[in-house]
Image (cartoon, rainbow, N blue to C red; front, top):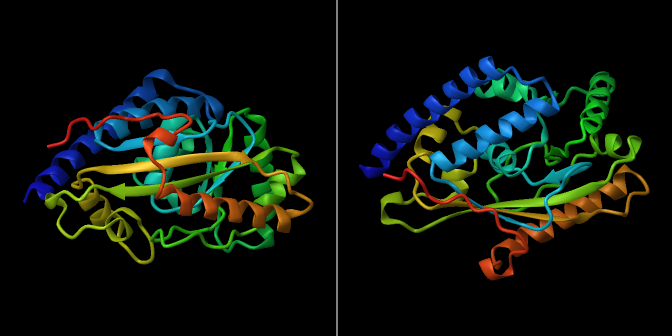
Length: 269
């Protein structure tokens, strides 16, 4: 019962915050691209705080170049954007999401058509080059899909072309979700109720996710990947680092954090 109450309350709050962001955009009129990414960063912080999520950040936060991460949920973009302004790379379907899609457009997101083939490469490469010139770090998810968190899939190599062609540095990051064992969460698990993958419906999933208590994300940023003789080596080394970091996160305690950016639990029912 209480999870249902929290789901309704936070859904209303989430919708209100999204509408407020749209109104704020109409007033401020931030420029598309880097300025938009900085603007959306502020709103992502408000949303994460308002929804009662906690986010712990470890390592040196990137300020430029490219960053690659594992991919677990639609929450990933929200959480990364709450930490630091990023130019995001997302699948083209995100652009059509109500309100959320419109906001990602204003932040200068680069959209990639999955399975688009060689005919889409010139446009994507040009968009990535422009994103690197923004001066903000560019974040993408080379697994190409979200997973249930059981592991890190092999990385697709396409976007690594842009890293080499533009001579930018590449950093890795790993993201992991945990869920406190509150009785009010019932049988909820991270793999089924936080991660969003397979054929899960977006609307019912996010509704019940908003009813969870004790949801925490851990993000760990790694060092630059220097083994970059070609896109094959670069992608394989990056995948290995992300996989190793993701496996290690389960044993990381607060005392081992190099840098922590925690958003306290606020507004929980």
